[in-house]
Image (cartoon, rainbow, N blue to C red):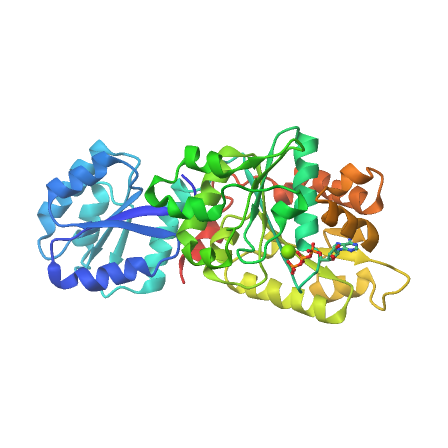
Length: 394
Ligand SMILES: Nc1ncnc2c1ncn2[C@@H]1O[C@H](COP(=O)(O)OP(=O)(O)OP(=O)(O)O)[C@@H](O)[C@H]1O
Ligand SMILES: [Mg+2]
């Protein structure tokens, strides 16, 4: 089902419509499919499938709506239902809950209360493949080495698991994931965004470039201006589809925290923050960490990678960094500019140039850690609930 809820609103009171829709639209990861004002419209929408949650506005005529909830609950036992009403006496709250609503939200609506109700019902139903793992990688400063690590990590994961690891380039303007593999992507994220409602597993697979090194690349748009077509909704859908298709998904994220970035982060089992042994880089990594944490990403899902470690020339040591970030670094990748640059210029992963190179060895070690570490274990039901719940409230 993924992390986006398709919802509809059942409402027979035109005066409340604007406000209710506005409140629902202000929730993250919720897509309003329609507002329905009679039982026939509701029945048609539900029979078309794909709806995860219905908000029932009980006002002004309470009893008929409770009857409808009763019938819908019998016919669609897995559907989430939330009642909304100005009436707050115990009877008004109990009646819809007895027939199947899981949550009741009082009007005037408190946005935090609405988000909490939605996160409770979502937590029981949402989540991508419980067996899939989503790893986001982003840099604390430009040129930190994010793309190099993302590409080589995906390849090592693919080779260790002997199954394709998906690699999504979300640096929509200047991403160079495909170039790093010397891959001439015929279709890109832009084509998936253009598919709109037709975007499904088949459309996704037509845009994926499966390489012989066990990496399946989904490239950024070819033209820079095509990025305007990519919306957070597109990202949600694409990541959802990737997670339902691939066991491991690596996402090369841009540095800016825009809605598209956050749409991907919402799916992440871990966000890796790449920094170098330089004071500004470490400071920015910590600022990035704190900002993500404030947005609801738990600390245990945020990990630091130190790239280009070079004990001899750096004034900072790993222990200085750990003191600043207040946790152990997840991985250290050594410095070897000639080699990494050669790998990029040739469009060949590091391992294919020299399997014993120290940079390659460190990334392979990180891949093993990712695949065996419980902190990056694929999210099981309930595990992602708190994170998702907090992100729901904008
Ligand atoms: N471990 C390393 N040792 C030496 N050089 C490295 C290492 N990792 C990356 N580099 C070099 O750093 C430069 C930037 O790498 P990369 O493109 O991976 O960074 P990035 O964080 O994705 O950059 P951007 O912010 O532009 O997206 C490249 O020239 C690459 O060769
Ligand atoms: Mg990059």
